[in-house]
Image 1 (cartoon, rainbow, N blue to C red):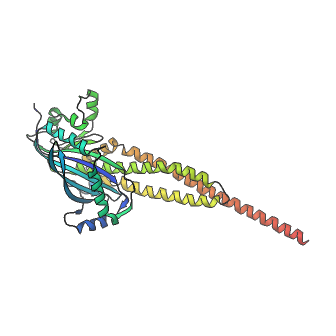
Image 2 (tube, helix red, strand yellow):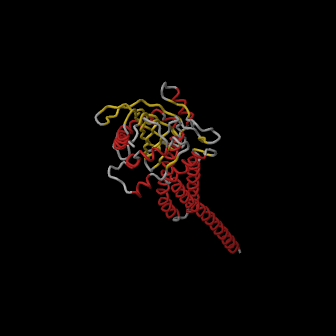
Image 3 (cartoon, one colour):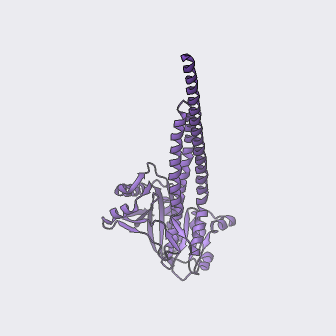
Length: 369
């Protein structure tokens, strides 16, 4: 059977940026509401009851001006949207609508946009979009990031094919491997099986296939919940990477400070100062990582829970989270050791002072006699 054509679809290239320590969403919402067409609403999941799946703090939706892309020599208008998360992440998406294309043309478009806008592409467009958002919402950003960490992801979304298709029909008659891998050369059977391992369906006529940097989504019912789950998982990955790298930089600095602090007569005081600094760092990172972990709560929707869990595992979010926890534990232990040592040194100084006073008292008495 010939591969079906894509009647209605969309290719979206996502970029995620860590732009600040935190974002005041209420303030951002107010700023955007004052400008017509700028968005400023809070995102809700479209098809799932809040009791089953809900945002901890719904992100603010941004509407940005369309951009024109040169695709295969043709100027094409692309939509630009954004979302702001309270833990400091900005998600931008550039999407191109697809109508009446063959499957091969759809795959070519995905791979073209991946080269044009995806990972490693030196494109000023993203920098301009981020700069525009940061400038407009500057007062809502708490401790803006000096250098921004980023992640990217591509979603190939099909709303309808040119003929009725079930999930089984798609897996049998549509070449998802080239779309998800971006490879031109044929892949081995093992590589293909590994690429298509994470696939999910709820109804007979929907399908989600996930990979590390791309996803294929067939959603004829108009829902966007799966896309929202993929987005939150990417945002969590970015933040966990940020805190992992932050603590990687902090640990050697901490060891150097500890060694420096040990020297000198007032080392106990410096120990106390350093211990308070480390305690503040642990409290700050713990607060933010808990906020990231709880960004989306999935309880009763078993299907979305499966997709969400598989995405977190695929992105290795939990591994980054465990690495952050281990490094925080090292800093906590160091804080405890510093506090104990500072207390011990203060006790020693007090004991020495008491002994000195006793000796002075004895000498003074002997002198009087």
